Length: 101
Image (cartoon, rainbow, N blue to C red; front, side):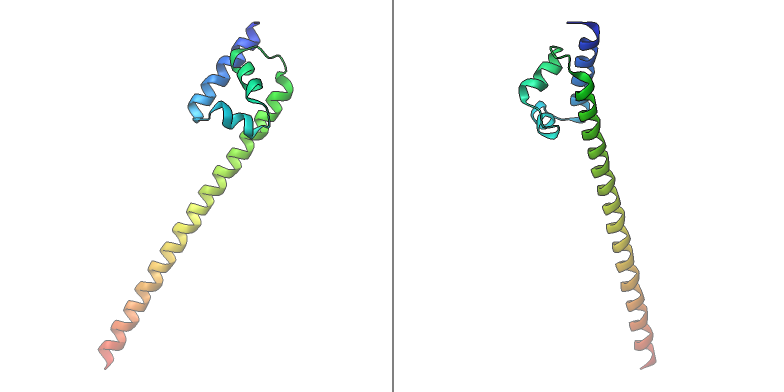
């Protein structure tokens, strides 16, 4: 095993651990066999340029999904605030109407 393969294998192992992604999830995400993933992690594969492109595509997709989730959370929070404001306005209107009778 050459130094590049060992470096890539170690880096991939760390990334999977940090991101809490299993080898199986990675294999599904980039449409590679579990054996291929195992070969990368053990440094027995030299087909890294194509693999790096596929991993980068997966990373970008995950980032896009994370951003969509954050956007949805912001939208939900905004809607909750809007509902709270509307409820408070209704309460104030009811109070004023109650005071006029």
